[in-house]
Length: 409
Image (cartoon, rainbow, N blue to C red; front, top):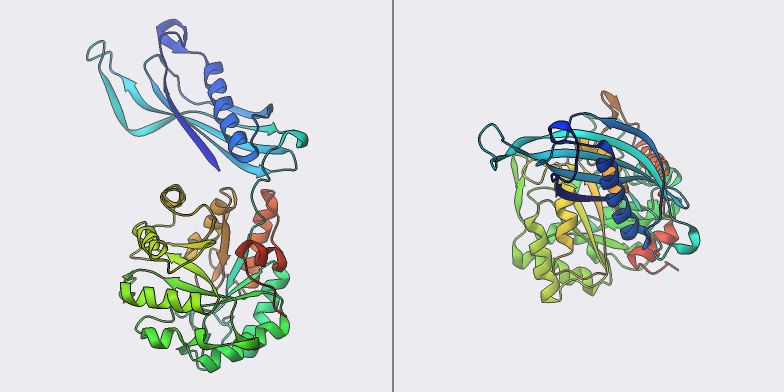
């Protein structure tokens, strides 16, 4: 979570010769954004307990426009650790004339700080964020055994990997299926075998892909939706727009999307609406208006696919902000970062209140040059990061409650 304000330093803020502004003024502005963060998260202004570090990096003058940003970096029971940065974005040009000013091409960081705020338990008016749901995408359609020997292919391997992921903290398994030779398949029979193997070994939410692999027909991609009884999935993905997908074209025609959405709803499954770009939110709004998807809405931001939106905090913040426009309040969101962006996007989502997806479908490395020995180590890395910022990891029952999935008999 972050808050930002912009303010012009006036002549009244100048404290020293030459129009130099006292650093205490910047600390006061850091306090203002801290207060906003506490109000947004806790419903109370709270108390600023202490600064842990303060750096003044460049002089500030009357006439400067400052952009002040604060973000919560860790959530304790009553404490909130925060980081602050002040940047000069506009500077006066007294060398030109007495009223000239320039917007800077690159903002100048003038101060940074870290600190801790406290909201007494009896004054908190909000419950804070939900426990984080960790989704494990353990197979995918693109990753190969040539890239990593740890990719599960058979139902038995997929079931065992699902158990390892559940033990590490995952509560949702995002499922693609493969033939024994690694060929992607959306076969109803193969998905049924995989789901049976997963449920035999792990208490998790099973989310089937209707994206399949590039080039598959809609009829082929939606075969897993035909499963029922003990093999019926709990969720299904809903890809809502066509896009360039690397060097391929991922085709999702509007009428096909509407048809898949209606089938998911008719089966009583919870859809995960997959978003690869900002415009996909408008496609989601159209589905809501058509009554094709029902609340609660769950969005997955898949960031970093060549042809889609980049995996950056700026892109994530843009998507989160756009969720507030003309969409139901009863919604949740998660992030799947592709490749080396996977764990950085986990960290970004955790401190913004979102859920996360990791696994070999999107990324095969635990660190630079270090292959992850399956998806479970990536789940463990996400869970460790959640603990570091004070976000509890959701249990399977909590995930079902948050996603409005009925418990299986």
